[in-house]
Length: 219
Image (cartoon, rainbow, N blue to C red; front, side, top):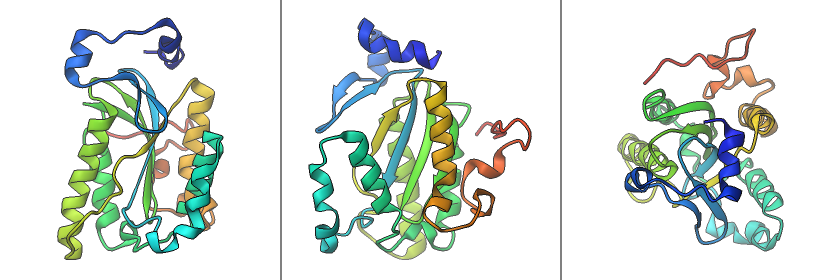
């Protein structure tokens, strides 16, 4: 489905089919604080983070961000805070980033199409085209696989990921391209490397040097 057509479903009603509802898609809905769209064919920018990435003992540093009225500005400020790399940063530890990437890629070409990703020290960004599996199920699968393996590797117990995630629909191809650039440039923006090619855990290294197409084999 063309993403512009998919976006227009909101204004035209775009009722879900019975089959889509059976698969768990919810269409337009509220998730406590923002409207979200959950339909096949959409391209979604999703961010999920470690449980301690915004430490409660430093709540005074980020609590004021909750009161920002503009949601785009609020998300930008929260993502800037994540880029400070607070918490234990388990995604920067030993083999955890390796199997996080493998989890992201595993069902590519079967359940969804992965367009870009980056594994940061305390959070993950991914851009994914939704096929016949709802985004919530995709993210839950990613998080559960990584949490089990990471806790085992690190010899820890307890919550690994912060519950829920942030998501944003791509309205057109231009926004999709900007999202890819943002995701792959995040390590540079966070001053973790000088150029995107230096960061070992992102979709950058799978891109064709000329076409910039992602050359990722099906999972």
